Image 1 (cartoon, rainbow, N blue to C red):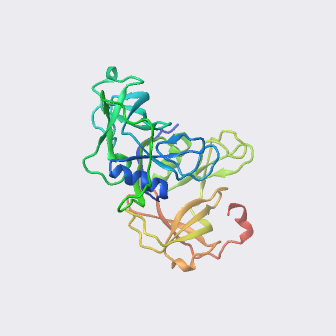
Image 2: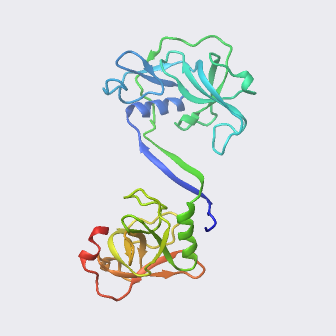
Amino acid sequence: MPDILSAPLVVEFPFTRSLGPVQSAFLTGLRERTVLGVRADDGTVLVPPVEYDPVTANELGDLVEVAPTGTVTTWAWNPSPRRDQPLDTPFAWVLVRLDGAGTALLHVLDAPGPDAVRTGMRVRIRWAANRTGAITDIACFEPYEGEPGRCEPAPHTGEFADPVTGIVAPARLDYVHTPGRAQSAYIKALEERRTVGERCPACRKVYVPPRGACPTCGVATAEQVEVGPRGTVTTFCIVNIKAKNLDIEVPYVYAHIALDGADLALHGRIGGIPYDQVRMGLRVEPVWSDGARHVDHYRPTGEPDADYDTYKELV
């Protein structure tokens, strides 16, 4: 059995969204040190506000201002903050029901230790020094022993100068990927410039890349089968937008390729041919870069196009 591989991976992208009137007012309000909620159909003040009633699904727009003080309803201690979390010292995740609100807001509490945190404790907002119209305009919550804020929320128009109309939130996931036995064998074969799949003992289909089990029959696969190296383009798309950190000039073609002997198409880039001449049925072969452990792209073999009936089940 080959050694099981593992590698650290990062998935990262900016998430951009526009804001409707409710979310725009909420985030702009934070920039102005004002916390807004919205009144639901049953009279409950929802903080953070939502655009539609969670029970009736009716559109909501009755904005109200609540106090910057509140009560911890539940909490959990975080002894080891991670990158980009609100505080770089140990803190508590807390749900805080602000005075005047009927629901709780998730944020962090700056406290010296878990013994200093309790359900029911009074807290207040610590505002960030530089505010831009984001949830991070609330730097954190801090313990508060002063007078309670007003319990009755005050009506608010939601109107501010220079309202925030959109946000860009970075999304990032760091994890360690372990491909497992079947895919580890597949990756090791690629180092030898071979493509290896596994055959299902029941339906006899060969899956590339192998999954360790047949998705159709639900039984384990173990019999290795070398496929290709040539194959057939079953379908494709033309990419016109250049990806960040990808040194490939647009436009280019990305295709599903059914390697000879495989019953599942894999994907790869098509090169060595003008993008507008790529077609279904085109016969292709792999091109390996020096020192690379995977196929760089596929190029035409010069063979006649494959008949549609030979690959129609793989489109």
